[in-house]
Length: 150
Image 1 (cartoon, rainbow, N blue to C red):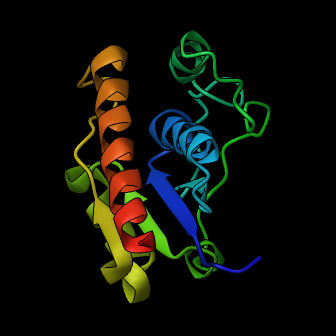
Image 2 (cartoon, rainbow, N blue to C red; image 1 turned 180 degrees about the vertical axis):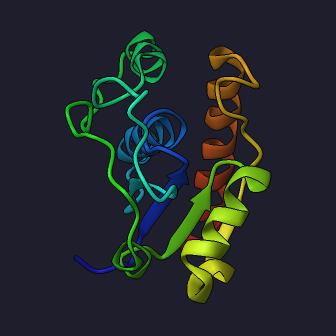
């Protein structure tokens, strides 16, 4: 698949924040007829055994509360590869302080392509607040893509 109009969301484990961002983005652009699609990956070197199931229950509950049936709810977390960067026109990591060092270490050659948001993981910020910040950031991203499309 072409990288045109694809967004890659990154978080540490591809279990909570990036998965929620992917699902919210795809739901919203689908409704707005914007020809973009998101996918998500883990930027950590290994997946966490602490993450039980394919997607965080907090992300799943928040999506269901919005009436969104997540298309990727049964997919297990996936580690990021260089090919994922090649498949994406835009790359967004969910937390600058947390993810910038990981990106620099694992993907130095493409690290300049990553935009960083500021959404803390669950041990630092409650899910309602964190997922609300992702909603807001996704809205801003979609707005910028709509302006670009004009």
